[in-house]
Figure (cartoon, rainbow, N blue to C red):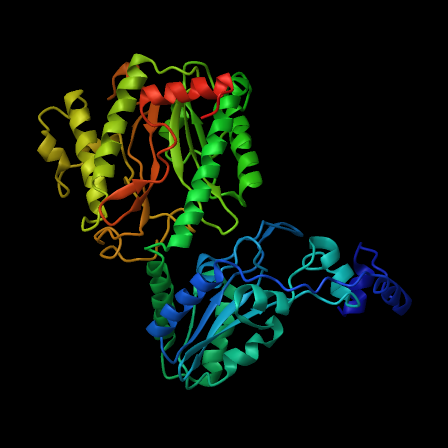
Length: 501
């Protein structure tokens, strides 16, 4: 079917006459051409690109932002760029879909070129007729000049990218972050095949994976600007939790009270940041014992605990990841407090292990000892199993029935940051200043768990904070959010009395 036939067959009625085109292109005010200030992040991003350039000299590196993904028919999910692209450019929530950063090899390093779809002129059909990209439909995009001034990166139209990919393809090693944009990865593969590069397809894909893994590892230690963005995300998350506490009484009795709580946090996340950093967990009662409960379809009942695991992602795409377990009535019962304080003790042990020179795995090991000891003291481990036996990594693990997840993960632009690293670089990696990670032990007693004491069943508790490794230890970046049982109760009292956090 020709394009004219498609227009006639479409249910849309878009005028296409020359007279209409001339009319819609006329009568617009001149766009302000004021200089765009250089973004604060621009110099940090330039240093990151320079470090990447030194690691892969003489090679062409392709880092896509990714494209839009269809949600339903002709509607798309909200676009979020690939983390590696955002980290290397400094662009965050305002990245244009299908943008691509290319580090093109030069004798003295690399030239950074940002390929994207710039603002279209108003005499173009895209301006008024393209519902996916057109200014009339989704708003204006930046011009090339604006991006260059803001980020200090050279720009080109996305349509010229294939020519750059093909340039010297047979003589230049080309690497692409494959997971960011499948279509672009296929184009790179086609270019390689046409150039008859000496490397096999398997070798080429391994080279791509090496690039992606290296980029993941480069983000392990945050610079001062990144730590500042994390502080913003955590402060915004704190405000969101205040709103949850204030709104809990209204959530009680609603058929889907958990979603009421989720909506309250989402309101603050969208207002104070770009949105939520991951699907919010609002788990009341027994739902707290499902580690990733994101359906949030349940009621919120008086007397229950509600476990809220949530984080605000700010415009730069750095996200917090914080969990608090709150008594809906404002007061813990004796049994709830007993379990809560055991988890808090485990978290304190994990926090104490966060210091330079320790291994990342030491955090989980420290928290695990406390969890196992408490379960052993409560008589929950199988008869005859000692504390030492359950803590044996090869043959033990009985206590993991009630805490099945790890205690920590790296945090930054991704809620589970730097995940492409190999085990020896991640779990066995050494903690260094600038790393930001979570510490989040828990205890989970499902309502149908016949091996748990009857009074424990239906109670789930997790406490999670975001921690910066410092030169001499650590800083709990989310320490302003109360953690002890007494402080949580006082926090609820203050918020509900209107006194704030």
